[in-house]
Length: 444
Ligand code: AMP
Image (cartoon, rainbow, N blue to C red; front, side, top):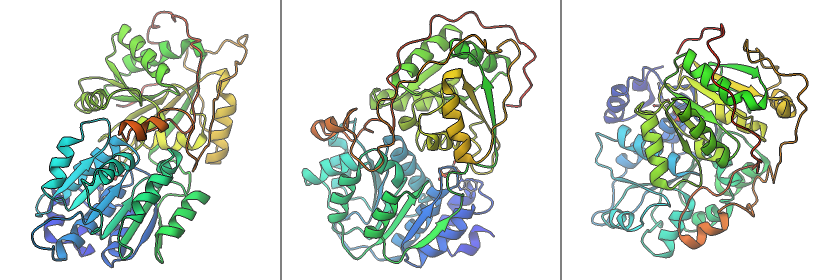
C-alpha cells in the first residue's frame, strides 16, 4: 500500500514523501482511512509504530477540508499528551506533515513561561498540542477557548492515567463540544482505559497493531548478569569497546540517573540525565545534545523517557530493571522504531531476579542471557531488597512526587513515576574499566 492510495491531500503526501516514508506503517494504513471517515478510534499502539503520523495526517486533512470560520481562529483540534517531551515531538510532527498547509499549531506545556504561550494562542491556533496541567492553567486564565474543538486526540492515554491526569482529562473533556471526533491511543488497554474510552468515544473502531505487552520484533534483547557494584564498569566497557555513539540508558531513580552521569563522565563518556527534577530547559538541552550527537549517553528515568522519539536509536540499556514489567516494554520500544533494527541490553544483578522473572512472564518468553567474560557474577554476593515505595497506582492520583505541586505552581510537569524506588546508594566507587575482554562484537 502507498500513501497515495489513502485518500490524503496531495500536500500531505508530499510532506510524507519528503520524510522518505515509502509506505504507511500498519497503524497508519488502518487508522488513516477510518479517521478520514470521521469515526472515533481506540488505537492500541506503542510509540515507534508510526502512530503520530497515523492521527496527525488525517487530522490535518480533515481540518483543511472543512471551511474555517472567518476572523478569529479557534482551536479546532486538541492533542493531549502526558509529557512535555512528547508534546514537543507531536508538535514537531504537526509542523513537518502540515508544512504545505495553511494551518497554525502551538505546543503548550508547563515548566516554561506562560506568557509566550498566551501570545501565541491570542494570534489564533488551529491545532493545539498540550499537556493536561498547563492546558487547564490556560483555561483558568481564560487564555484558551476549547468550545470549537472538532477533533480530540488523547495520546499515550495509559500513561496519562498512570501519571494521575484523569481528573484533568475529565475537566478538559467537559469543556469540549459534545459533537466531535475523538481518538484515543494507548500502549495497553487496562480496565481504566476501557472505562475512559467508554465515556469518551462514540462507537469507536478498535485498531490494534501490536499485541498487548509485546516487544517490538526488530529489537534484539540481551540480558547480562553482573554484580550490582560492577554495572557501571561493565556499561562503560561495552560503550567504549563497541564504540557506541548514542545510547539511551534507564535507571530506576532520578538520583541514580544523576550519579551514573557523573560516573560515566569520569570514565570519559559524555552523558546527561533527563528526569522530572530537571528544569524544562535542562531537559530540552539534554535531549537536543543527545539527538545531535554532542553527548553519547542519555540517562533517563521511565517517566522522562516515555514517548521519546529519537531517530535511528540503535541502543537501549536497562542499567536497572524497572519495578513495573510493562515499563520494560516501553523502555525497549525506544529502539527498533519504524522498521529499524535495535538492541536492548539489560544489566541484571542478583537483586533483580524477581523483576526479570516478572518481565519474562509478561513477555511469555525467556530472554537470552550472556555473561560478559571478566564480569562473571560473584556467587558469594547475596541479594539485597530493592526498596519500593509505591507501584502500580494506575488510574489513581499519586500522593507523592510533585503531583500536588503541579496545580499550585502552574506547571504541567510530569508528576512522579509509575513506581519509585528510593534506593539507598549501594554503589561504592567501582574499579577501573576492564580491558576489552572478547565481548561479542555488535554492530552500531
Ligand atoms: P511514532 O510511533 O509516531 O513515535 O513514530 C516513530 C518513528 O517512525 C518516527 O521517527 C517517525 O518519523 C517514523 N515514521 C512514521 N511513519 C513512518 C513511515 N510510514 N515510514 C517510515 N518511518 C515512519
